[in-house]
Length: 103
Image (cartoon, rainbow, N blue to C red; front, side, top):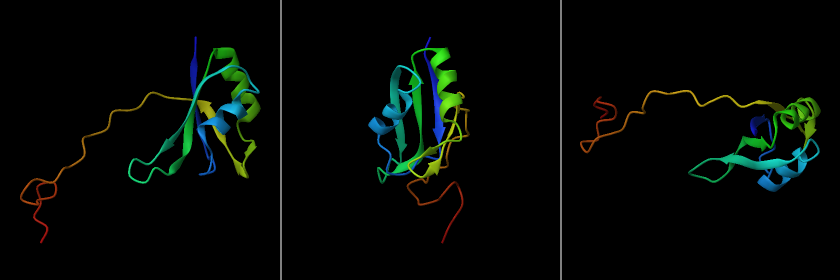
């Protein structure tokens, strides 16, 4: 079964393809995605790699965690599920931000 890994500390210039290529040393990569800012499209410096098996995922963690990647030390570990967060405050039509008057 496929296992998703978190990869942090990536150089901002890293592409999905470069991330995938680095992890192929440990086995078959099902997917590799760099997380980008929605507004600017710039990398946030982390991503996720999905390995095709649990054994390959463990091998990738052992091989790459704490290693140099593009001049930066990366962190590789098993991805955790996204935790629920409280909803963000939205401003209403009267320009009240979160229910407060900001004049």
